[in-house]
Length: 271
Length: 98
Image 1 (cartoon, chains in turn brown, cyan):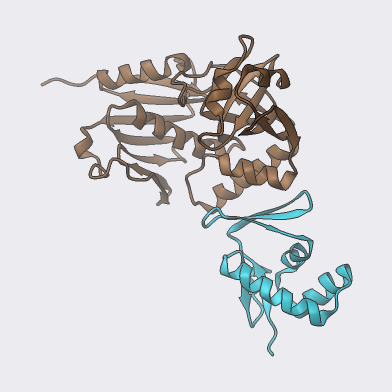
Image 2 (cartoon, helix red, strand yellow):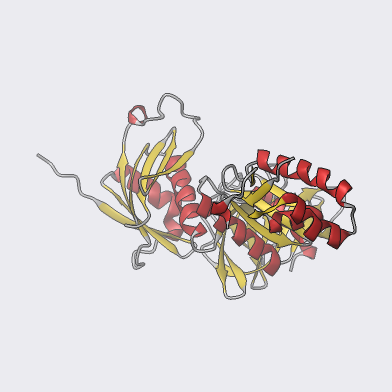
């Protein structure tokens, strides 16, 4: 009889260390490839997962790999379900179990949901936005698919540090917000740098014939940012917290509309 | 006609921003924004004050509108908000709201 050896890996994104325990060498390799720049073995984990890597056919949603993500709160546990993973999380015990296919997409999706749930309780937000640091300040570029998040990331000058071209991570700190790098990549297929900086501005992206920045009123900014926030749960308390966080964000950080022509001159406006 | 009582749903989050009352439904994350008149009614929806009294106190006085004009508009508004689940309507006081 052989006993599988469990390996612990701590992935720290946005100052939230999450311990992942797996006995699958194949999955361990997936983690190291995907989150190598975000591993912190010395961190005290905020949450722990036991991961069971199973054949895709053994997952509850296996019949439909494209099944929409479902997030339910039942009996004091979060139940997360998608075609390629099934997770049950106990927020009080800060522990959970995940069954997933040994795919980077499954663990990436699970991480995004878990971070969105944990971060919401701490006044933070995951935003569908690219972000970068320039001159010690972070800038966010929010928009729907096709708005230009990856394009503006590609156009960034050498002195800009890319935090992500897909999912930005914001935490409330003091009177403002801090943006953290994330490994969540979009079309750029490249993780962000594992660094942080105070958020100086949030731009709502649109592409046009010329570069310009326009002010956006608080109510319109709230609407636009809410549309870009990653949030999956229909839980009264958490929805209220996310709404409050967005209201706080638009009142503490300038939110402006950035229309840009896709060449590197747009970065002359961002500093 | 019997009195109409209105109460804010507890399944919403609301904030005044840029002169608009922004309301988010926790049920389906739908976002609503109310203008100043509608916001005045929303804020006064305590479940125990009849709608016609709310309109007199918070709409007619503040916006210089005749009650005969304001009340039908207010009734239409509260029906619409109730359909979206962000306000409760009853012909009796709504005690749980107070």
